[in-house]
Image 1: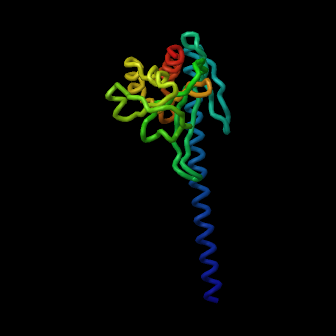
Image 2 (image 1 turned 90 degrees about the vertical axis):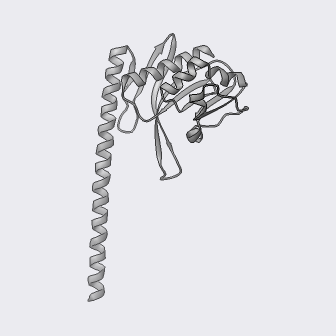
Image 3 (image 1 turned 120 degrees about the vertical axis):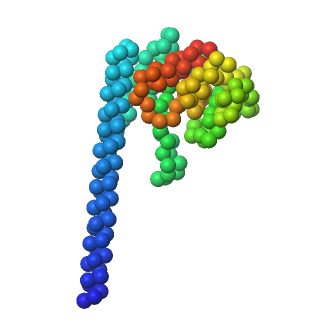
Length: 200
């Protein structure tokens, strides 16, 4: 009798844990859904105010904002990097554009350098002391990475809290940590991507 009573109590406790887990998961999904709706709404307003195009996405797809800056087409998307199965996830807002020069380059926050695919080439010096304190750069040819570190651009990378600038396979990618809905942050990232692409 005592064994059966113990089993019944264990089953009730397990059912309780499962119930709490389901409620917690539902709360997380509801919160994430609300954040996604807020982001879509903010990006929709940004698109309308600045003549950009918005693909609003859906429950399983992130929105995509696109436009032309100085004749250069740029898209803004959301990205995530997850450390291992079930590990910590890092969110990014990502500006992308096509580029012509052959080669590859990477300017990356040292703490997050592994969040993007690596590139070849030697390490190049980062002249701006604010950027040099946190970032590393490499590329082939080395001049390509150095072009991304021009004095006026290095300051803007710091100002816009850019964690990665990666050039490879004909694409320039600029990442900023977090999913951003702020119009100023989004436009600055898109404009920076266009300006970098035009200088290469």
